[in-house]
Length: 626
View 1 (cartoon, one colour):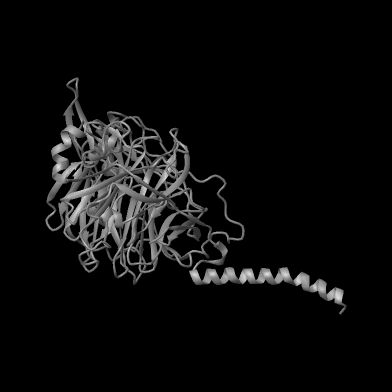
View 2 (cartoon, one colour):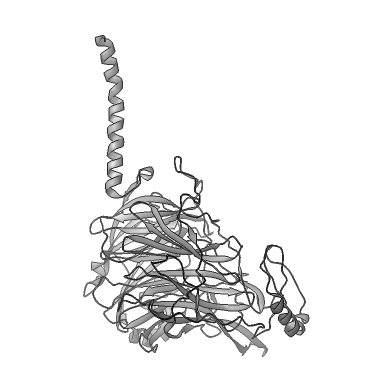
């Protein structure tokens, strides 16, 4: 070989060697961190903001005493703003990633026909629809369980219940709870909405952490944070962060919507979707709030917050996990690329947090949409709004991230989907659907106990049933959801839109593990209450739909619950209607159809105005309240 040729080959080999070394380093780093080589993460460091913020500390007794003078701004009918899910522009499957399909995903298992989910240990009413004139939709059903108390926080009310007896110990309106942060126009508690709450099992006492958004639009968009003392009936410390400021600067005139809340041993994590005043989706944001400052006595009025504006690979409605144990990482679960879930994470939790762009986890294909089919219910053709397919809840426990949302099944009905993901490898460990031949299921929440038993609570209805609350468990031995059990049956049809054209329900629910034994579960679900009749200003009687909430506790070791009662064949509170089946729908049985038609034909004849709101659905006669 000539010296010239030898030199040329050595020069050509150097780039190849460097490429091989670089590739090996990437693969080793990926193997060491548990990250798949097909998705090497992009990182982002949180922007540190330290500033004096609106702060208050008061007890529930003080809140109630001052409520009449401080909480006047939100009286009247309120429809909480809701922005439909928007996908990031140009979202496509990344080059080099395999196409999604059944071979890439764990099998999607339906509900088991038997045995049933366990029977309830206890069951009692939560807060219900506020009186006419102070009405609100939807309730945004949210609650948490501590060692001694249950805490409920809705768009209407805040309250504390005795866990053993169900007795309501404290109650105030949602605005009254936050009122000490200011209720005047532009102040944080002027228009509170979208509450979330978690029990912080890391703090060593009965501490709860709550988050609620404030204000309707920028530049008056706020995130309000509250932390209880060791007794949730006592004092709460509260702060407000200006959500529309990016890195403490009004760079864009965007406001926050639909928060997510997570907690681990180090921090509180809040996410939000950011929208323009016209409702155009812009980006997502993440706030990491070091927890030690929130637990300091006396609490500080100056907060340090780490902020991630539109972090790499992020998307709308990212759910931070309620984290059990100390993995040293906080995970975020959300809808990612088509037929994939995104799993992003933040590490360096005790210092300056670092965001890592998500792994894309293939799941059983479903249609990601901002407008799911609406759920039918008994007694009216006012179908129930099921919104979109956004992720609704996430939990990290025992090495897995669990998540749930609702999707349209192959039959066209809306059903609950759940997932278990290994966040270190991006592998889908298991997944499933909670479905029924007739009933639609929507707005689920998920919890995991120390033994990896999973509980899911949700709403459900169909054309022969009012909207009620339901639950199930997934034993680790089978990995399949047990047959669904009834938490609380609906009592009447539900039609409440405040002339918006949307029969709002949800927008979420709560299912949590009981920290006393770390085995049993609590779920708080919405149901349709009996109607109330009142007289309007013209002395005419008005029939008004109402929502209610219901607490239930159940333990995996309990005997199976009896199956839900057979659905009623006629509607109370306004009458049922003959149903009309269209192609692709699931018609009722001949006996049910005959009995409904015979018993209710006179009621239907009074207002024979049939129309079809959506193809492929059973649609009864429209009720005038819808």
